Image (tube, rainbow, N blue to C red; front, side, top):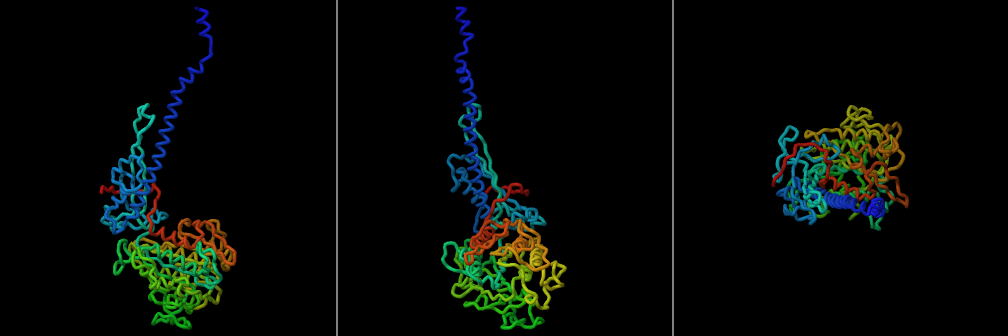
Length: 536
């Protein structure tokens, strides 16, 4: 017996069985933990998606006058059956709480987020009347959703359920401001009418000049904007939401008394200024269009074709209104409408930028965001003759560097364009807002500009080039405001500038700009503000 016991004691065969049995508890425990953690991560992603959707929907409803309750909009998109959600319901996700709060975030503290002004509305609570927020309105919404998820194997270790949370913050509808004053500045130099860009309209066999392509793009933008409040069957006499005007360069000449273009530009002393009359260039918006008379850049030309209006659509849901002078101005050859390309004066941006900002300032309305959209295909290289004249501009070298007194120089023209844009972006209105500039480089050359330039390299674009100039004109961040679209003419596709929004279809550029202006957007969670919790 002793010998048998001794052999059994010393025999090591079968010990792995004991080790496996002992380790199975740990192995099953880790497997169980992995399954529960994997399910929790899946649930967290679903919850975050629901929260993002709810915040975006809530932001889109601010400050829409047709919305009776932003809180109800949020809960409908929250996915929570406990809150009678209609959308985004996941039956494996037990959402137990949806918290909604509003805040007035400082646009100066977060300039890169393009926050709209703090608008007041009855559908959400006041965010507090302060010196910087006299209306007491809100411009951001925060949604926090909480879900309780049961565990599978965690119960063995005493964990019956897991609580997960997701937070999302969105700007109010607009992501820039509602309403808008938008001044379009289009290049109508001769190069914009030369050749056809076969790549500007996807899926179309039509042959369009670059100018027509640009005008088709503007039509797309007009279809995205809001002429008046949502829900109205007709704008009628109701307040305008987004008003649009249009300027073109080279500039045209008009008589002082009537504001009507003349066949021959009058002498410099009799020319009028650039901001008073909304009917400077009837030939540019009449059908059929004919070339208007043009003036040299320092001869106080009129850049304004049409002042602000909102008849481009007759309601928020209506299609383009072809009886609108603005729509006919960007008719892109339809029924012989659309601005022509008279050319003759080369390309020079600064004068048009100054005129556009002057018009925006003279027509600014409190809590309306001023927008400038400039599109051009070339470098600033107008000749000395094309820069001729002696009429003084409304701003001088004390405000815009690179000018000769009140007259733009015939050299360093790209630099002057960037300086003029920086001046425009730096003009502060009474409500502390500044103009946002969208710059669209449409087939810009890789070299050019005049002598004496000092445009630095911007976003990897070589210094003193059209690409660096157009990037310098843009507001920042470039990833939001700067676009570079190639032209495909005679089988050759032009260069795309660095640092621009990665969109190379002109119509999509205008769709994107419209979406940026009109759609609520998610913003980072690191914003700070005084949040007011909504309960209904």
